[in-house]
Amino acid sequence: MTRAPGTTSKRRVGYVFVRLGLLLMVLNGLFPAVWLLLTSFKTENELTRIPITYLPHHFTLHNYVDVFTQNPFARFLLNSAVVSLVATLVTVLFASLAGYALARLRLRFRRPVLTAIVMTSMFPALVMLVPLYRLFVGVDVPGLTQLFAYLHAMGWGFMPTRVMTPNLLNTYWALIIPYVALSLPITTLILTSFFQLIPDDLEAAATVDGTTRVGALFRIVAPLSAPGMVTAGIIAFVNSWNEFLLALTFNTATTMRTVPVGITLYQGEFAFPWAVISAAVTLGIVPLVVLILSFQQRIISGLTAGGVKG
Image: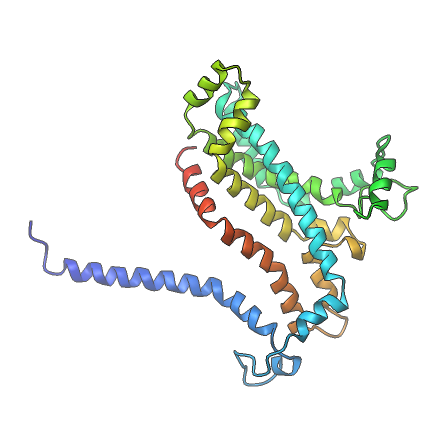
C-alpha cells in the first residue's frame, strides 16, 4: 500500500507540535517551582533590584536559617506530618471498607450511594466550617477530657490550653476529623473502581478455606490493590498537607499551626519578606515531592488501573 506523498511530512509536523505542546506544559509547571527555589537563595536587596536577576548573584542560606529562628517551623512540620499521616491512615481504612462493599456486595441502592459520594466530594470545606466549629467548641464526652489531658501532658498537644472547658479546638483531632471527611469520597471512588478489577475467584477460594469477607479484604484484596491504596493514600495526604482554611480557623495557637498557616506568620504589617517566605514554602513542598517521587510508579499504575472500569 502506497502512502500519499505528503503523509509522512504531515505526521512529522504533527509530532513536532505535540512535543512542543508537552514541553510548554512541563515548563509551565516547573517554572514557578524553580523560580521559588531560586528566590529562596537570594538576598532582600537582590529581590528589589532592577533589572530582575534570575539566578542569585550572592548565594545565601540565611533565609532558611530565618525560617526556623523567626517561628517554630519545625513544630509546623511536625503538626502537618501528624495530622496528615493519621488522617491518611483513617481515610484509607474507611475507604477500603466502603469501596470493598460497593465493589463486591450486592447492595440494593449501590448507584444512589455512588451518586451521593460524588456529590459529597463537590462540597467545599467552607460548607462545614461553621457547623464543625460549633461542634468542636461544645463537645464533652465522658472520659475524653481526662484522656486528652493525659495526652497533652505527654507532649502530643491533644488538649486545649484550658482543660476546664473541654473542646477540640487547638488539637490535632480538630483537623483530622474534617480531613478524613473531605478525602473519604474521592478515595472511596478510587478504591471501588480498583477493587472491581480483582477477580472474584481469589476471594471465593479464600472463603472456602474459612476466611471471612473482612479477612479476604485484608489478606488478599488489599495486597493486590497496593497501587490503588498508595494512590488513594497520597491523594488524602496531599489534601491534608495543603489544606489552609480549616487549619487557620480551628487551630489558632502558634504551636498547633500547620505549615500552610504557619507560613503566613512571616508576613509583617509593613513588610513582606519574599525570600524567607520562599524558603518556608520550599521546605513545605519538599516532603510532598519526596513522597510523590518515591511512589511515582505505583501512583501511575493505580490511576490508570482504576480508570479502566467504573
